Length: 464
Image 1: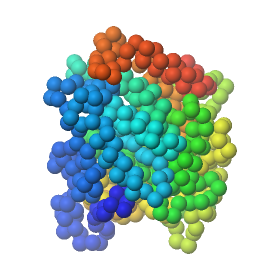
Image 2: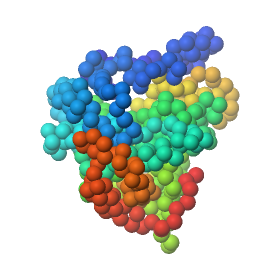
Image 3: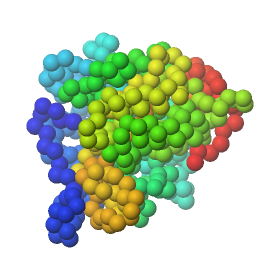
């Protein structure tokens, strides 16, 4: 967020009536385009503190395809771990009171190992300070027609499994976000099919960013909500969603946009009452950011719902004139009560006026012709906008539940079935994985699988 470090807000897209075609041309000229970007930090370098970017140097022939290979960057490279930690400590010392740490880690490469090493040290230094870890995997990098596709998928599955085991041990909550799983968003009613690209890191990461930004908003605001069931701190969120050490793996989903910014509490309650509950197999939120790639597990015969252990629902940008956020939260509370939590007292929920801003750094992937400047649905079909909305309302959900059973099962199977060649590649380097490491990892993931797959049948069906 760059709070307190001189961050600049990007200019929003021009609203309706701001100059017609001239405004649209200006918007198109100023937008961030994927072809102009070489590395991810090019999207935001102007908004980052000078100490925010820590460049990692590696030998040109160093294999970085395995999660564990990243430790070689720290052990034998020119970039010692202590140097990276010092740059992190600089920002920790800026905090009056450290609430927690967010860590977004590329887990499908050696950088996953770098992230693990940094987080392990932070865990030792910070004690019980909560850490929210997000395991990012890039979109499909090798086409299915490519002869290397099978090998790529095998390495990716192994990296995701190693990351789930390693990062769930050091993080209070671990949220896997495989960007390749968002491929199904092509059929989403509010995404432009002619501009949305499922293999674009820019497009898929933007959707993941919306979900993460929204679900963490309740405790990141300068004045967080203090209702009895609103997570005012990251520690509250982690304790509700992960009341036990074997329940640290959470799933993220969202409705984006939720195009009803003027919905009254009564209208919102009626709309949510017509939606499926949060614990049914199909799920009410169209964009499943954590489970979209895994086969969707089914509850055992005789059971119709998943078991939700902990749940947090965050809504932003729905703010009808004259209404308080507490009135809207009443509608969210009624909706959450349809899906009771099994291990937490109740679901967390919060409503915020602040919508998600669509800046010039956000990809042009929305169906602008059916959305107004505030992300509202044009029921009359007369807007015909050529530029994106200025902002959009969003509803995001973070949960620990048996819905994640398919993801946990896939990780466990990837470890069990890892080929000798793959295990050899992961054993390279001073901190490579040996036979005992694989055995320990398989045992730990087996324990987690028993919890997340407790109510699930042995069969699965493809997610829709």
